[in-house]
Image (cartoon, rainbow, N blue to C red):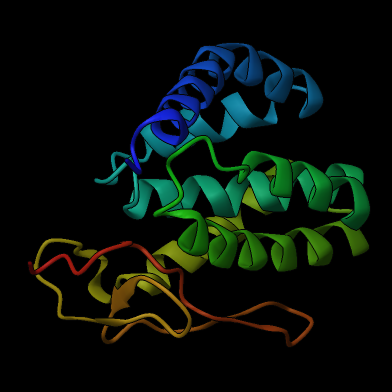
Length: 179
């Protein structure tokens, strides 16, 4: 029986991981010096829909990846972002998150190299989101598959940083929003 002992072990492991999740959030907040909570707060304040696997989630990933990279540099930021994406049994959004983290890291690299501030991180992350929803309307859009994963708005535009680096539009939905 496939679900016998193997199933019990898997269920027990999942329960242990879920019980560790609240403590993981405390470690994450400590390791990011509050940047994780800051990014959540800004994404909620944006009033974008979809805090899980949607536009607000994409914005949060842009913000935290950019700010961590700006403050700590590529090595530490990369390790924190990889740890953040560690699978606690909810991996459906990992590809979308990693894609948006990469865009955020590009923002962070630019801001860090120009001795920029958190305000610069916010400005560029907002610009990526605005360009990801041409016309500023997330309700009446046509969707297309993202370049690697998820879904993005069909007429979404890229964002160009002042140094010429082109940022692709954010992937703003994990699954087809029209279904």
